[in-house]
Length: 112
Length: 110
Image: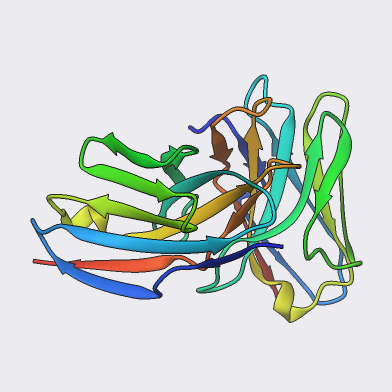
């Protein structure tokens, strides 16, 4: 157990639907990062939150949004889903400018 | 912005040594990370360099040259379980986000 918890582990949904992925960071970590990894692709940075505030944005589609709550857990919302959104979605957390970035086990999203 | 390059695939023999190179161009550098990722699993941390030089950690070593924008990961005494993707990532100075290369898929043969 890495200390970063992601739920659900697997999600199958239809095109056009909306889903929410959840991430609880490692205890004490203030930063949460979301990444998308499509089949045989690298990790694409989506968005970063630090202590509840958005800190950096990557190539995140307008159909996607995220937030970090006061208890530091984060949610990634994906709407109007398309087949191409099928991917592994990873959450990672890190301490305050520390060395470690710890990844959760990921959510495998399949859009059918 | 950032640009990170690493070879797509490499093969090696069990017991051998392999070096995986990574070159990067970045507007704000604050450290370079190497991660291992088995297919369908989460990346796991291997090493971190922020200053020039070699960091050794058991069978794994990582080297950084900031002036050349270059790093390598050295894996010694290769084992079959080392077959995985190896991801090079650069940390952005302003935000701490990690930007990853596309990864190097290493296959270890008996």
